[in-house]
Image 1 (cartoon, rainbow, N blue to C red):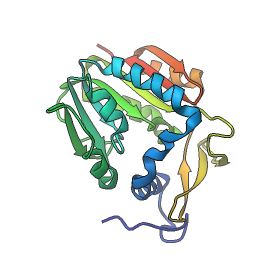
Image 2 (image 1 turned 120 degrees about the vertical axis):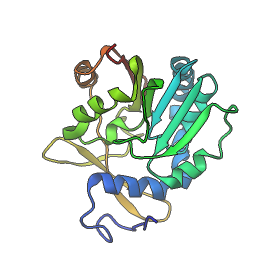
Image 3 (image 1 turned 45 degrees about the vertical axis):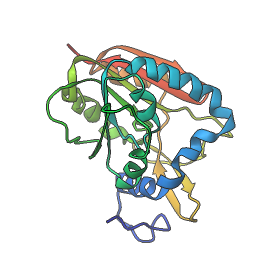
Image 4 (image 1 turned 180 degrees about the vertical axis):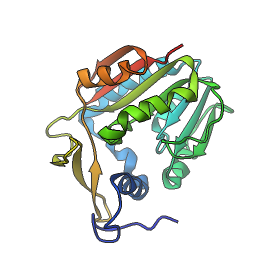
Length: 232
């Protein structure tokens, strides 16, 4: 069972950035989807629900870091299947309460770096708000590691935040490798340092061009959507 902490260094002084991330999202589970209620983001979100719905239509999608199932529900409306994975049981409990078409969604507990998926039965992979949490030194190996999870020539898509002053949480610091961090406070009063990177369009295309083809980045006011194709 996860023990929650009420300060960045109080109970977990030796926790890695990824450990802290898992703890943070477990503790944030009940209030996570409030971020989608921000008024200034509604036009973007409406457009993205349509766009992601079209990208996933008719496909068997492997979703990494599904969280509370917000985008799982969007994709399930038209996808042939969505296999949604997250490491936190706290968010998966919420994801399981969503309304999905019968037989189209499988929710699985697992690590995004080592998903418990055998074979290549999925022809698409989607991850929302995960890219920004992957340490830069680990990003290339992560992008390579997901290729064996989907069929050759499959579609890969990542959705994440752009940094928008006044809407985004301020950057608190940058480490020696170039990763940036935010300080976030939850309703229970706990404070968390969260790794959150904001890549440029050129960086996105450069990274995925090493492992796939046809990279395309769509920019919205508050978000970016990257899509590309796995090698055949």
